[in-house]
Length: 508
Image (tube, rainbow, N blue to C red):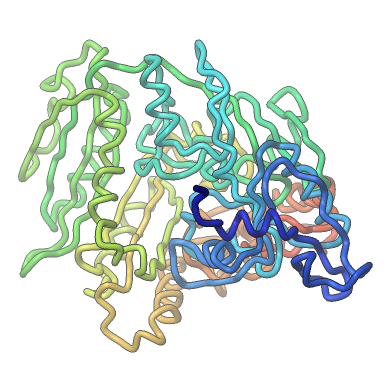
């Protein structure tokens, strides 16, 4: 006996079309004869049932909402290309969505078409030095599959419940401090442009599209398949947590800098824990050394400032890689965390400024900002010369770049819940000014100097802010948009404006 019919199956049977007069997606059965344009024949599904649309109406931040008109669940790149071409011809906005992990509507497309990339999740091959995978594959699944073949991707984000194409569209930052963003480890990728063309690109083939799409926030195309660098997987990972008290932030940074300079550790990051009781925040330095090296732990940590506490661990590589997934699932267990507002603040800052700027931010944080139990601060150090992708904007003229993240929620809302989002956005704007962010409101800084927002968090962008963010590279951003998405249909969520002359200078 057949099971119940799902909403998605009803959509397939009834059929979805587009009404050009009302500029609206409709069920074919509800449309007047001759009034609608049929959609291309697809191997996958085009859906507009209420439950499906609601699923794609928000993101992890719970601050911005926008209900799409239809959702494509493609079965192959041909479906993506056909629907993007269809939408380009009619001026319909399109956005690809993976794990919905941004927090301020970056992937939303009100009344437009969402491409649900999680339908494209095949592992094509994992061979010597390269993994060839669909962009909708979760990093978690790639890590497990690769581990079974004795290899690993060198620069994993801590949380792996993200799609490969999603992190590559924003940059992808890990604790592997030698590599820059994940985008630096892409050999080749397949992109569906805003024209509906399917293009393979790399540093040698179609390099302009390659540069524009990596960390390009979905503005020139949808990444559908990638070939990534992989390396041998170690058998064992040795971990250390070095804890420094509230007055010892300088020692924590000294440890991280010294370990970076030695290049004997494999991963490094700083986790700032909220104040407890009468004490201040704790600065927890996390160190990982992969066990196939020859450097012992005592040698690794030689001549460093003595921490207040020191814990050690040893585990197999796969367990290490999945550590933060396990922690995250525990936080999400009762569903409350998923419903919280998350006005996250993420910024790249030069090494010379990081202690002053991050210290000022931490000292300014209220109990509401810390949101105990759900909020914390992170800092990821990186060698600056690892960053070469032009769309991922980081400070220049420094040897080290730090990604600082203040990951806060409304779990300790001390004011009116109705005004929490506005208060948090105003706070983030003040933090931008403290960090000398080039796109901060009312800043007069040189748009190619200072700190840069990592645009996955909560920020109200303006056209001027985007021009300042890209600085002297803005003409390249605009030119690529006109070349690959001339109807400007792709990924409207970030709020970029492309009417300016591509040859024009950045806003003063």
